[in-house]
Image (cartoon, rainbow, N blue to C red; front, side, top):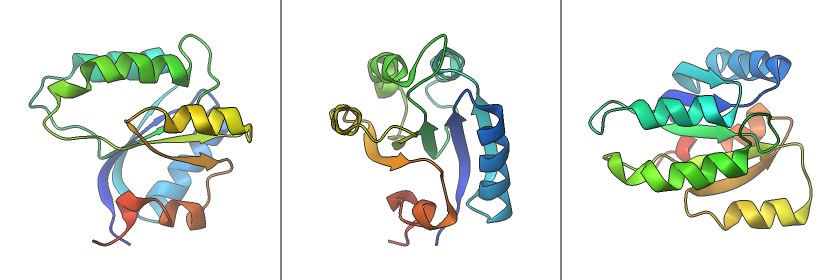
Length: 133
């Protein structure tokens, strides 16, 4: 498994955020973790970054959130992603098992996969970003 430097989690569940932080840091998936409680806070962070600023290596995105949900985040992010020097893979992480949500997620070019909660050590290891090339 190859660790990444920074992971961005966009999810409104504080208990889930605590669990993900413990999992990602304790299992050495990343060196740094940034957590936003809704899509708008996450979007504002990315929108405010300079084009040459360091960006997270991965975004883990929930879809059901207040203020701005994951779908709205993806719509807005797709408008600004070109300003970054490299692609940031996004994985939708949701408790939804609805096939239409999974299909919708895969309809976004930015989305590299869909993971059903709970996030575990085993399903994290399966994400392409952590696999040795």
